[in-house]
Amino acid sequence: MNKNVERGQATRAHLIDVATRLFAERGYDGTSIEAVLADSGVSRGSLYHHFRGKDALFWAVLEGVAARVGQQLLEAERDAPDQIAALRIWCREWIRLAGDQVFQQIVLIDAPAVLGWQRWREIDEQANMGWIRAALTHAAEAGSLERRDVDVFAHILLAAVNEVAMMIARAPGRHQRPEQKILTASIH
Image (cartoon, rainbow, N blue to C red; front, side):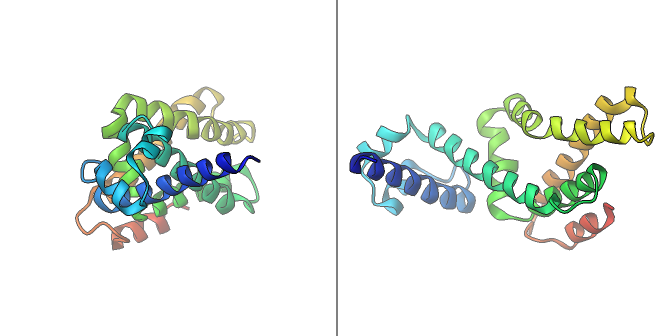
């Protein structure tokens, strides 16, 4: 690979790492481009070479966090004996992640505000709804659920898990609250 391309990729990754930390600590509104530049040591021209602006930088951060979360969810459910057990694990893990400062601030608090509620929901449905439907379809095939109820229950489950995660993320003193531990333990 060309040295300039490697340097460019390294600079982009560094900017995303710094911005992820700052967005998680200060929120989107509390993080300026100047703060990212100061903390990263990168020139303004270099930042704008990689990102059109703060919204584009946030989008790259969100994609990175979503990829990390997706990997964590896959790892958590990997040894599940069946899809329903995997779905239960996924729900517990999603709620557990609501206690993670990066996930809280970037995915649950800032993303709906920055992207808009409708766009955030579309992304959430693209990322999670298909998998939930597949697990519930498996339950319907096993006779545990009426096939006609799969879509409705998938929406209900995604909405419920998101609401609990949002409740945890927006609560005062929100990091690893006792209610979160109770909620996480009760989903089985």
